[in-house]
Image (cartoon, rainbow over all chains, first blue to last red; front, side):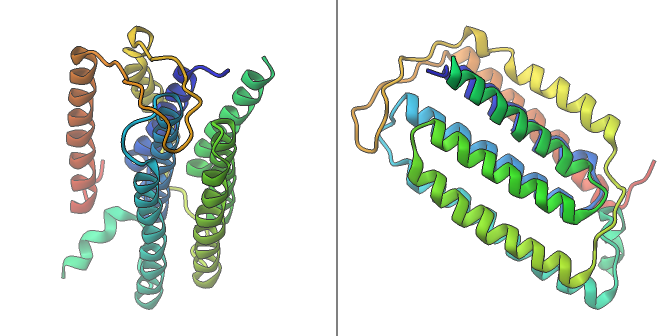
Length: 101
Length: 158
């Protein structure tokens, strides 16, 4: 039997990679994919706690909410590709400020 | 003992793929690493005795999102980048993970219940000090990340 602490530590490590990935990169797509890592860590933590300590609620609602957010994010990404391809813009987020004009 | 070894292997796979995802210079490789990460997560679900969740994860994440990303990346040729700062990534990751793991040894978890959907509830014990620690940590994360993203949005440079 794998202890719950192992799953908690793993999901913390993955979640931190996702959060730090947002901070450490200037690439727009990588920032969005780092959010995906954080979401994956959240699903793992939720499922582990559900497995070890069954809550009164239903875990599927939470997981489907997370998966919906993740899928929506990918669609936003595709829309952003199209936008950037049309204007030949950079994916460097520090240069996004020029879109204010 | 075998399940612990399998868990360690999957954990190493997940963490290495997460890190590589942020460090690869070609974004196609990044998407491939992301796909591997999703598969590792499905294996975690299998270890937790939730095969349905593992299959749904594979369908939604690997099938849907990875295909979307492949199509997007292949269509618009945004493949090269060199923006991730490796030193910042590694240092902040180690520090943040260590801080988040501080209360873990003192936590008391109730015994595993071999949960299936609809089984009896077992209460989880988390002291108020631990909860307060994580709330403070989340607030700090939020403020720090919000500031960084705001600075990036404003176009701040070194």
